[in-house]
Length: 432
Image (cartoon, rainbow, N blue to C red; front, side, top):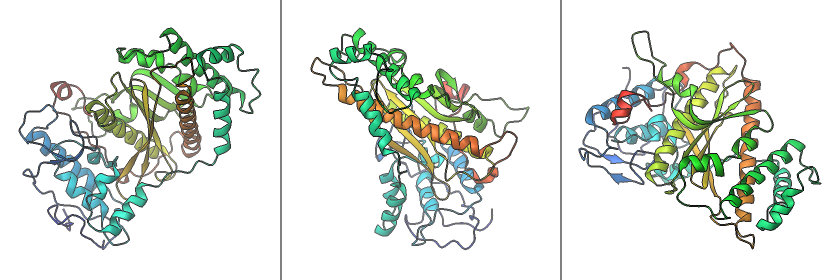
């Protein structure tokens, strides 16, 4: 397999000076006795924990599946042909993460080379300089330059949303009477979104029920999302059980005529560029808000992270140049009346980062004093900013891509994990 990198049992955080530009393949090492798990989107886990290997839990992989997962992760790691992420001290970050992930007994987003928790990765290093260098890289955020536009959007929304009675009066005037400097499509989009939200609260007696189904939240409370996303015509929003083409392409990358064809991952909604038809965003929803550390949220965030990386890989493969460091994909995780916004960006070496852009919640009650209006205003403003970010990325994707023109070589697109979950349904039907 070529010259070996340091064995997986070496001390975490040790430094390594690469001798060549290309990565040296890592030899796989059997660490079945190490049963550490992490809560980085791993099924049934929240936070650093211990898993009893043969507990019989539905979230614990069998020995056979653990072996398959490790082998696939090992293969995907070594198939990557570009330089690893190396810190100024000489520490090879990719190798340190590899040693940690190879010992896991449950699937994590790290198996797909996606980092979602900064602290999880920082804890793998003992050197303070290394910790700080990693924290600095993972804390990088895109600076939004159009702050005044956000102020104008906030002022427009605030001119309508106040007490329920004042909101009803303001909405009855329409949007054409507004003296806001916003463009007409934005005013129309925000106005109709506010109208849909107000009607939902009005029909519920200004108090949201806690016993509604997942379908109700999507089709009623969040029914304005297509209005927000599609008004400009640059984005397409597909609701319902929609299959990701990017996910399907990854799952069937090695398929031949003798093997079965797998479906792409099903989502509760998808956002794509209308011109290129390339997927840029994924939406997952649940009727119960158990917080970001709930099992459902952890599973959905792992699902989102993997599909967002599939989308990132597909767009990168279609581009005329290497755009991986400039490209972002997007995700919305809806839990009852709360939405959490995500972006996925590339890091140095093999890894990507799933960045949590914050959670925003519809108030349970919109009372006669107008309490609750501020939360709705903040939520609408944040969604508008998020939509604008997706639109900006869609415009760049149109510029970067052309039909029939190839992009980066496949050996520099590190593969997402395809090992199935240990459920009969997953085993018979689809891979993650």
